[in-house]
Length: 323
Image 1 (cartoon, helix red, strand yellow):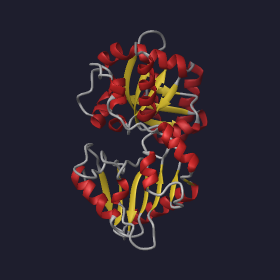
Image 2 (cartoon, one colour; image 1 turned 30 degrees about the vertical axis):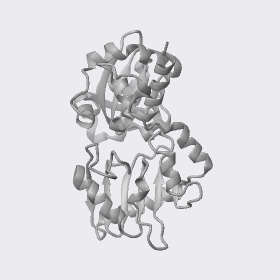
Image 3 (tube, helix red, strand yellow; image 1 turned 60 degrees about the horizontal axis):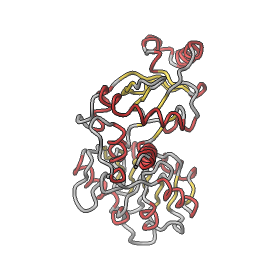
């Protein structure tokens, strides 16, 4: 299902009983989607760290007193459950993802499973495990959501520069929510790459040929576990070892937790499939965004960003550039 069909299916599931949602981002008005009749309140798990959940939406859902409103850092799932079935897909509980007073503005996709299906039972078990690992959205979590949330699409009043990927992300982070962005300026050593490749080969003995075929420049080594856990399968690499910026679209093929490593293949097409064909070319992005990328690297070094985190950084940077 996609677009309106998916949105209507999610609304139908949320109108059921025993509602459970492990959905990363909640927008203003999302509480109207929930069936609050009866004694059983919906159980909700969200994220407050990545900048996509509105603190006002959390308050409308009962925070900080609602014990059935919980969060997990870097949750990026979109799973809706009730007695009417399960939906697993890409749509957040927001005006953009589902459409609260009209059709959704983003193109989303998802699959619905009947309540008597094996997949539904697996989704229930998965939800309960996440619930046990989650924490109530208290005052501290609300403060975090307030600090990180960025709802605007106007880039602080700045125009979106032609050819700028960063301005597009800052103006509409929802559009890029399923894409991670990696800024990097330092490379791994040949010894480190050989070590990672050997570890991945040993863990995937049936795919040694595929592992060997993956290029060295698609390897990312020495990252923290929290980065690996939230790294989207499709991501953008902004590589700038000097004053020249190179832009790549990538897809993860293998992850090696022991080495903090990712092996990927190049695919700009996969980025366009998620965010749309109207993206600037890689060459135009490199020419337009090099200065800001260099400033961000000087400030943060190698770093993995969500679109919401990067949007905040970009807006802060451009605000400081005002005359």
